[in-house]
Image (tube, rainbow over all chains, first blue to last red; front, top):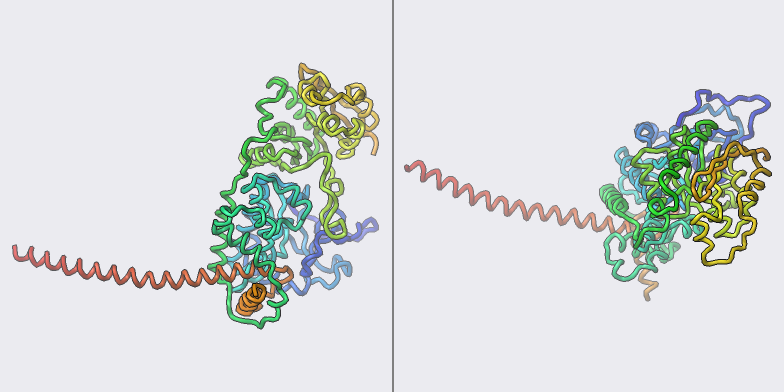
Length: 479
Length: 83
């Protein structure tokens, strides 16, 4: 994550327009602006005093050095003129390759993000700094390492202040994690339908009595949920008083949550189908090796910067892409067990590989305020190359999506890529069709090639299994 | 009745809390969270008081043991002197 050396904003005729990022309106203390591909942040007068305090505390360089916070550099306000209003400061941050949402993170990702959020509080409190919120959308991933992206969340702390972000932390981190840890239900579908997270009262209503007796569950979920129903208008009539939330109690609460969250494990009763896939798939090691070599060669020859691996499973071919020289790989899969394994693998091998949840037939949509606050997958980014290995039979046969549409979807995603065609003779496809009528007369290699050639040039192809699985490397010709 | 009780609890808590946290208040912390934190603060306070008294109790017994051991040691050394 480096900031470009050239920081002066040019004023040529080709100067890109400045536009406000639609997802950054909540905190009036500042706003994110796009200046072409560059990411700028304003600090408004209302937040300037806190900003100065935090700068003077020395916290920011410490967090940046440890990789916990995105770097920042100061720009002169004059460079942007009136476009940023009466801002006090103007900052620039490096642009991230990909923005992901918490409802796309696997359990391990949300857990890592929660721990980062707590560590930020604990580190900040040492210097009398706190955070104004605790939203999961302020965290992004580089590989599987979470990094905090909102400099303006840091505010001056005074002993006795209440933790303003406690409720948000519970709704956006703790409760979604507990859903999987207590019930074995992944958070993704609920979270996506409710982008502010899962409310304490809702989770509490699901808890059986015996699970309510844990002190942590009782205070953070059950009591918070039931007391939340109390009318706050009565509270606001109250006059300022003397009770405080002492720093020691704040730190104890943060440490308690940290220990608890670090210990959470998914409560799945048995391994998911695809977790076991690597062991029980229908092709042999030599065939998998042929596939890996094909991918590594494809990447080393076409040199994509970012690769999207659709249906990444535990990440075998994402790793092959990295070995071929890709700078980063975003892996997508719909199997939570496989994603958790992929996440652990990327962490232990320190890979630039981010596994995310995706149902290919139902990707994340544009949603939130103005349907622009949280962008859908298509609007957020495009890859330099796409991999779709052992994928299209699941989409074309299990989900009935016409083969031509699957090919269009994949070739729209990146200007080049590799698609594996799995023929009807393959045991996996035989299995898919075992209990249902074959209503797919066009599902064959000839038709697949015809569909692909409408959109792309086939650069090379190679049969990689005895059952006739074949890889096609393509380069898109239509836009 | 229950409702009135709740209102009283909240009124008391927020009355006591005051608005020292208002500096960061673009986010609604939620009454549930604030009340839980008030409770935790109360427990932390109570724990501090109990711990203070416990230290006193401990010190009392430690001193008691120490003084009896001192008495014993000095008695023994006196015996040794006699030999």
